[in-house]
Image (tube, rainbow, N blue to C red; front, side):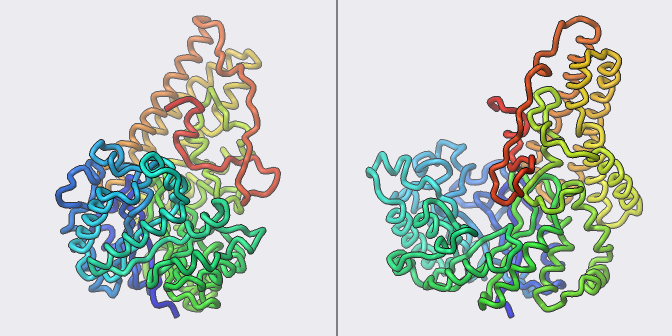
Length: 542
């Protein structure tokens, strides 16, 4: 059985989970059989004498984190801080005070005393915040352009592997000064040997590391293999075997699918994690963590994922009968497993195997006039959203602890019911030069704007219950901007119908196919593959 089986909460993508909510979540985890919780905090923790570190980002005070650790420990939950000491620190570089420690992108400048002074402060703060923690995750993932910015200017070209290892040894030394044993994400070791690739399902040789690199790895540093979307046990096993060659302990990090827009995906979580934990058992991996990322602003409520979090642990424990799992879940949580699974459906209707698509988000933010995502519209979507909204509204009307989540997803469905294909209908009516159709559609733009504002209210309720207020301004700017844009387009249509403008040039541009690059899609699908508001809202500069 696992030595550690836990969850990692991403608190760094605008949604900083309230300490009270972390404690409630930890209580659920302890009852579900988990014994570890990792808090991923890039810059959202207090560092004395570093006022700009996490400034205006809702950072945790040291006292808040000590309180969380104390409570979790009382439940038998080990707390492991997860920080970044190489890359993934984009928000500190908003402030000029940190420019001297910037290499390139979001990467710290290696081999710099100023950098190591800051890192030492990070560990000192973590030791104060987590006085009982033995382990710490030091990050080190996805540092793709390491050494190619200020480091290059300062030192000339140096192979990335040399910079990486020298910096790693220094960070490990500092971590141990403060009584921490480090764990780290393992991907950069593979990327540096295999042309940027972490793993390849087509070529198992990509899982092999050279003896040279393996011998240079610092001893005692646990390597965490992360993989989120495989449904084939062998795909996990290949890389788990490769990790046995590292000198430290091996870990596996899977996923709870929370980073693809407003909607979580419990079903995808189970379909990916069930084979993953089987592979971990077979390969003797005793440390398993399920990551909950909040990419692009943490629009998804982590609480909506309780069904799959519970099911994966029970499956690992040997309970494979889903009916039994559902029964146990309802006894523990007081809510129907199947009812909570309905929270997935706004992002997954009729597209059961397309895990990586944020379809609902594309067509929430897809601009009706530029409409570059319109070629990815799916048939019968409007009817699906209408039907699902009715089901979710019925559940919300019953009240209870999760009514706010049912309402949140119901308002999303109602918004998409109106807006989903609004641009396509507008384009067709314009091409037909039908002023009657355009006049009727103009009214729908007003209704869509109203629906977006209702969605914003529902999201506000969920956000302020679960997270600190900082970061929600981003969501209000996005949804507020969408509402304003819809009302503006209504005026444009009215002007055209009244003859005040001779044409609507945006609707005259030919729409090209939306191409897919991700290897996990079946050939021929026209669903786009990105979860990025800036890439969805416009192809112009933001």
